[in-house]
Image (cartoon, rainbow, N blue to C red; front, top):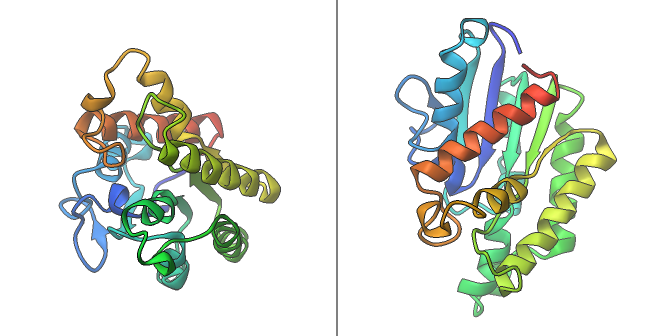
Length: 213
């Protein structure tokens, strides 16, 4: 990344984190989550201080919802894109069992992700898929097991299309070896400030390892 580049970060409530509407921009509109922290970490380094970070997270979004507004992402002319999506695709199958149409099946998830990746990857310098996560030490928990399945699907699409992949679940699993899960999230889905900080660090480390930075 270099001065003048535009990094658009897309996702659900984890990305949204109270960002400004219609477009979340620095210095005050990026929200109180990992996107704002990524901006702060980049802005603190002279070599990266000219990179524009934009937050296009929307609370409650599934991959279906993001696919429907994907043109808004591309219309911003991003140089780089990150996409974290999938936990609501799973969560709707647990919190709204009476409304199955609100959920996204695994096959639909793959199809929506693939469509977005194909439409964007050749127009940007880099696209990074951030896996969904569920913060629970019990890997047999039904929601954790399903999130892992969607996470594996996203990983497969990233490898199939040659785009960057950031395994957020693996990072949080390692963190929970030393940090109690309840200090990272109160509901297993939405990170605390500490959780967002670890997420931002992991995103930037993944970018550095891929020579984005």
